[in-house]
Length: 291
Image 1 (tube, one colour):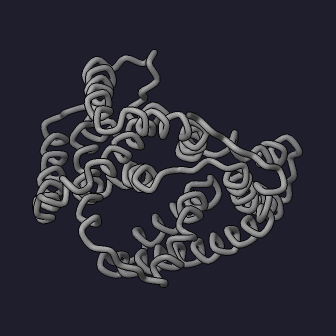
Image 2 (tube, helix red, strand yellow):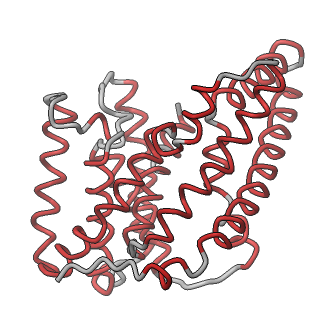
Image 3 (cartoon, one colour):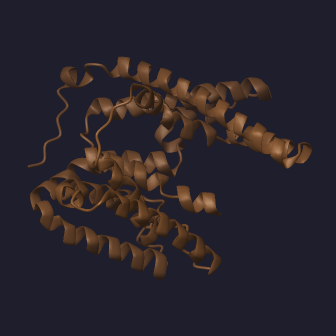
């Protein structure tokens, strides 16, 4: 429960980072994502076929349609990429005046999704394109107000994150149904508070950037059915056969190995997809302009 409350911000943070730097939609970026996913989903299915001694053509074709096969996160982020020129144009046009509309948007999401639990509007507890758009817009607004934000001491935002984490825990204990929603205002606020301290200091680390370039593969790989079932089996076996201290040590080793292998494979996928799509925007003259 404590770990979940502390890290539930991660999905929102990913979108906030994208919004702060801004998505600049290009044909190459779309194709790069598709190739990246194909390099993960298709080989994993082939490995599954060898282990099961069974090949199903319809399943193979399904894996090839990678965006359709990918889970909610990839699908929502893909749609956010498509919508990003429109969102960018809105924020650029209204400037700081867009803040009141974004706050209204945030309030409506909380009311309709968390309080009223309206399903027809597609909020879906934050597992939705609507929520991704909101988080992206919040981040675009953070960029506009960055100078004002930096006038506040960074420890205030750290304190905001810690208090939000505590509130999420107590909300769960109190039986608040929406405490684990990505659309929860506490989770959104906690995500923003976690991001803001990084605005105060610019630093570059080649090792961190190198690892970060492969981390999308970590998410994609470990939630695929076969890998997830293997990890769950290993987890149960270690828990059942080892003492609890030894279980913790060994499962951390498993997590570390899974992370490193996934990152390395992600970096390879990133390199291949980048090489394939290199120069494609110039050759196709693909331009999206909203004025």
